Structure formats: structure tokens, C-alpha cells
Length: 391
Image (cartoon, rainbow, N blue to C red; front, side, top):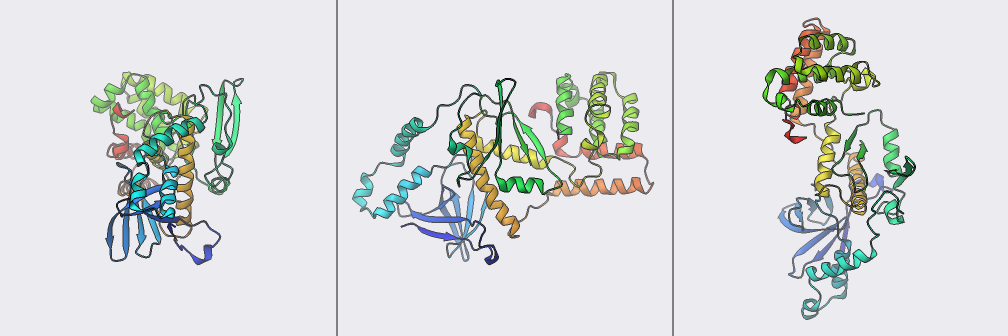
């Protein structure tokens, strides 16, 4: 039978789920580790720790265990779905204690996967061709069998459909926090769905950039330093004190190039006098001044899907796997085992912003000088000076 080990994170958290790992042996006699239905091979051993790497080529996910087979940590993200059926066969072969001759007669992994793929296609629900379909129960639950489909409703006379996924634990965390992040992505949306929206708000910087491109200004932005600086001046308004925003907007609009007039008209209608209150997009009083957290998650999640517009069943399977990852990270955070480190770039940006803001409050610089300094600060922030080829 496969050896099993668990990580004793804290004796006071006996009611909290722990990370379960098990061990197998390959046909060549090499040790293998199983974690969350993913297979890992041993990479190296040091005096107090063992390092394991995902057995799937190109998936840079690493597990660390102690030499006593205790789970320590996991790093990285899988770029493929798990294959529990393959692991089940490996475990059955181990439990059967087959001889070398009998093991050799067993189907190879390639043959097994081919046969299993055919069987799985027969058992998997037909991929929907519209938003009108039945969602089987396994796709409404977490891998542990708990409620995961939070809401399912149709709009526009059943021509469009909204599916909301969240576990009860995630909802409790959401409603108990004062600050939330939101971001939308289109490329990872399943077929027949337009967008995936994650609550972690419309992203102010992205919205301005997209309108620069929509107005045909991408080339000027990339090649004309004056155009680029004046566009960043608009973005820098989000860091200005709320009481100074409208005055500084009018000032830079009066100085703007004629080619940017339509952009300033959009900005005034949408952000200055539009339906979105200034306090919702201005981040001068907020401790988190960027939406990088949500955007980084979208990039990571997109790399896990590995293709645009996956099937609905593939997508739900991946977010079920993501929920397992969430549970593991939540355990780590609540037990103080690990914590996110602030990036050096973000720390530098925050420090410089605080210096400028304090100088303004102390009367050392005026609002015009503050906006100019913020514009220059953003010009050195890599995330805001990428060319539009990335959009």
C-alpha cells in the first residue's frame, strides 16, 4: 500500500484540513510523490529536505518534504489538468505486488492514456454549443463535494447566462475584508461565454489604455514622447488628492495636443463627470494603489489553461483545482507558515509616492509639481510603459 504522510502544521488546528501526500515507486524503482492528484519525481536530497518536481514535462511545480516524509511546501502552478485515473492504476499495481513479468505485461502509460481518453470522452458531458445546457452535479461542487456553484441565472430572455462559483469559505473571507480586487479577462472565458470576472471596480489604468488604442492613438503613444507623457498625466490623476483632480485635469487639457482632444473628452465623460464617482477610481487614500494582484492572478491562471477559450468542462475542472490551491494557501496564511513578500518594484513605487505626497502636504510642492512628479514616476514603472503590442 502507498505510504501516506501529512504535515503537522499546528497542533491547535486539528480541525483544519492538512496537506496529504503519498508515495509510490515507478516501474524503474524510482520514488514518486502524489499530491492533489499530481505526480512528482524526486529531484534531489539535502540533509533535512527532499525536493520533488512535477512529472509532466514543462510543468515547473516543486514540492518540498522533510526526510521523514512530511509535507513542507509547494511552489509553482501546473500548466495541465490532473490525471487521477492514472494514479489510481499505479496505486492498484503497487497494492497488487505484481512480479516484474506481470508488471511488464500491464499496459504502458501511453496505451492506458489512449484507452482512458476514449472512455472519458464517452463519460464526459457533451460540450455545450450554446448557453442552454444542464450542469451536471460534479461540476457544481468542489473536489471535496461541497457547494461550489453559487448562482446560475439567465439574462436577456435566456440568450445569455451567468455562472458564479465560490465556496462558502471564500465568501466568508470576501465579506469579512474591507478591500477587494476585481479584474476581468476575455481570453480564458469558456466557449459560449464572453468574459471571466474575478473578485479578488473597473481597472482605471487598463480602461484608459484601451481607449487610447480604440481612438487610434497607439502609434503616437509608442513613438511620440509628448503624447505618451500627456497620456500618463491622465493616469497620474488617480494618485492626486481628490480635491485637486478636476483642477489639474482642466490644466493639462488646456496644454494637450489637438490629437488627444477625443481622449480628454472620453476621460471627462467617464471619469470626471460620468457615472463613476471620483472616489472609486482615485487611489490617493488607498494603501493598495494598483490592481497588480488581480492582473497577476489572471496571467498565472491563463498559463494554467494553456489555450484561449477552453471548453466549459475543462474550465470548471481548473477552477476546482484552483480551489484546492486556495485551501492550501489559506492554511499556510492562517498558521503563519508563509506570507507574500512585497515586490521590490512595488515597494520602491510606494516609497517614492509617499515622499511626494508628504512634500505636497507640507507645502514643499504645489499640485502642478505633484502631478508632474507623479507622471515622471509612472514613466519609470514598467507596467505602465509597455507598448500597446501587449494588448
